[in-house]
Each structure stands twice: as C-alpha cells, then as structure tokens.
Length: 392
Image 1 (spheres, helix red, strand yellow):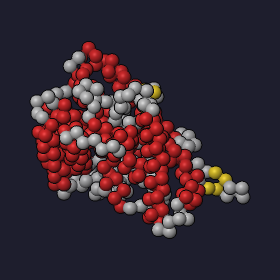
Image 2 (tube, rainbow, N blue to C red):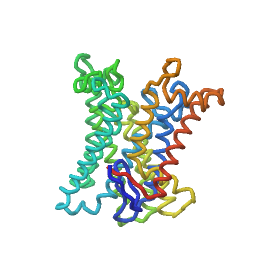
Image 3 (cartoon, one colour):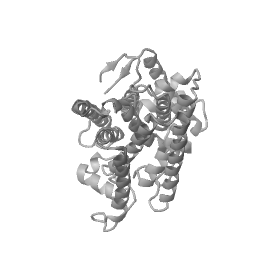
Image 4 (spheres, rainbow, N blue to C red):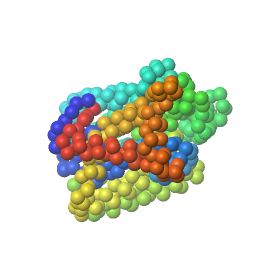
C-alpha cells in the first residue's frame, strides 16, 4: 500500500477525499465514529457476554452494531462523489480513473482474502466471501455508476436493485428446497454461495451460509448508490446549507419509514442485506450525516477534541485490515505453556487484564473491547498527527 504524507485526509474505504469543493468535515467525523463503533463491536473479550446494543441482531431485526457495515458503504458512496466530481465531466480522464479504481479494488480483494487465510493459511478451508471483498466490489461499481449514469438513472437503478433482490429471495424457489426461503442456510444466496465456493469456504461451514453472500452484492450496491446520491445533493451549488440539511433529513426519514413498512413483508435483516434493511440503515445513516453536516459544515462548530474522530477515519484501510488480522491471530494462534498445555494469546491477555478485576463477565468483556479500541485509536491518532496516510 502506498504511503502518503500529505496533509490531505484519506477518505472512505478506499481513500477518496473532498478535494474539489473543500473537505466535508461531517463525512470525516461520521467515518471516524463508524470506525470506533466497528472496533467495539468486533472485539469483545467473550462473545457469550456482550451488551445488546453493540452486538448484532441474531437474525431478523436491527441493533446498533448492524449499522457499522451499511454506514461504511453509505460513507463510501458519498466519498466517491467528493473524490471524483472533478473528472466526471471529463470522459477522456475516465480510463485513467478506472484503472486506478481497479487497482484499489484488487488490493482490497487480496487483503480481504488474506484476512480469511490468517493465521495458518489453510487454503482448503479459508473463507472466500468477506466484508472487505464486498466493500471493494461495491466501491468499484459505485464509481462506474457515478461516472457513467445521471443521478436519475442512479436512483432508478437503486429502486430496480431493491425490488429485484426482494423478488429473487421471496419468489424464486431454492433448488433442492422447492420454495423460496429467508432462513440462514436455505435462502437463495446461501445456495448460490455453496454452488460457487462449497461449504468449506463460507463463514459457517457446517450449515453452509455466509452473511457476505455473492447475491447480497445486489442490495449492497443500492446502499452505495444511496451514498452517491447523497453526495451529489450535498455538492449541489444551488441550495444553501440549511436547505440541504432539511431535505436530507426529510428524505432520510422517508427511507427509514419505508424500511420499517417493508419490514412487514421482507424483514430487516443485516445478514441477508434485505431491501428493507437497505432503506432503514441508509435512512439512519442519512439522518446522522444530516445532523453532523448541519453542526460542523453549516454552523461551523469545532470542538477541540474533534480532530480525534477525524483521525479515526483517516486510515480506514489500515485499521480495518489491521484490527481484523490481529484479532484473528490473537484468537486462533495456538501457543503452549511450559507444561505443554495450549492457550490462545487473546484469552491469556483477557484473563490477565480484565477477568481478575471485573467479576461481572459483561463488564469484563466490554473492558477488553474498550482496551482494544483505545489501542487502535491511539495508533490512528499518531499516524494522523504525523500526516501518514496509507492508501490502496
């Protein structure tokens, strides 16, 4: 990964910044908040003892933790607009831009596969789908849509993707089952993943399903397009800041309500990335961005600690890959005590630093998540202060 020491901030996954009309501070802060939440969600001391708001819904439903992934996709869509608006009207530049985008997509795909291989590189049973892989593909497709389609075409494409995905999962019989299904191992996406990758290369090998299914790329692109549309609205030269805020609030509220209504037919489900989930999470992301945009970019509020949140979002590729890779090594690498007994590094650290001092297992588990999060926030702060930004 190239290293940049420029004062410009790196952007979403992958880095793209608002270089054309000034940086969108609210987007930087939203990205940083999402990173912090991601670290808390992904690093409990004990997965059996975790407070509900920062763990995922068991299947249908929505918890705060379920916002992390769609928020990344939404932020990435907004960042695509701010990073590429200058070249959108220059078709002769598109091949150069798309080559650069293809390189970024390739790097992200490789890093995502590498996470699945760690720590022992078992090629016969590593996970092929993954979060970084989906982000990479949605990023590339979002760039193409932004460069080649009008905003109306983007909006209609999002509608078609959501409606088409709902029909696929709810109306198409699953081969071998004879009818449509929305359950983990029997939905159409799970069947397709088993066909393409076999059970050995999926998140849950025994049941043969993966929350980042290939079919889920369809609604995930719709999530990215919601961000792209939002970015174009915020960059519009006509309306003033308060007007942009009001309309973003209204449209986001409408999307959230539509998601809740659609939940009655196609349940809000993060693992399926259901169409109702896209609208609900996209609406919630839009509301958060609207609030931050009004406070930071319109009103110009600048608390002294704000830089730390910006720092948390300035090296997203590093923290995403690094935190996931380190967590896998700490939880899966077998070490041996002097007596020959086996232990895992993370278990030893957790039992040494947290369990002896906090008898409540929920408190102890949260304490480890906070320690892990603070370590990464500290690293990101140092990189930011030194203006070191890693890009794909």
